[in-house]
Image 1 (cartoon, one colour):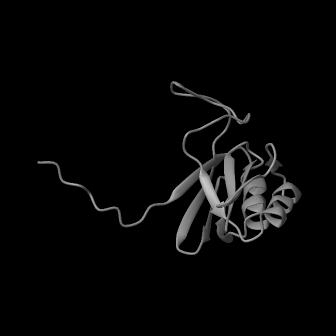
Image 2: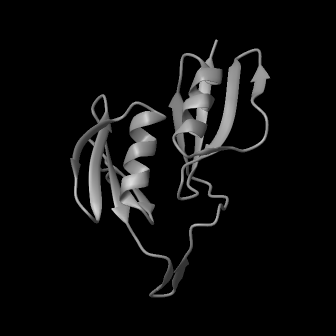
Length: 127
């Protein structure tokens, strides 16, 4: 018999090459609160959700090559926003990038963006 483990809480870790730029981005562009900043890590949050910004240099780590060029990943963060145009402006002003056009549908709008380290983030506006 397999028993499922109850997931009570989880943290999100975001690897970056520059902790200061990442903290600035997630605070200014997405409104996350900064709890603590150290040279190699920072703790930020929104609501009850904690995020850890972790400095991880480029290069080979074990058998994994880490580089901060933009790449696709099947797991990403979605941030629900009230005004997608304003959210995209804040992302760009904070050092992020809009990737393509804002896509609209009957259920809302979606903008694919990336943070200064190349991590993909989606902005979602629901109708």
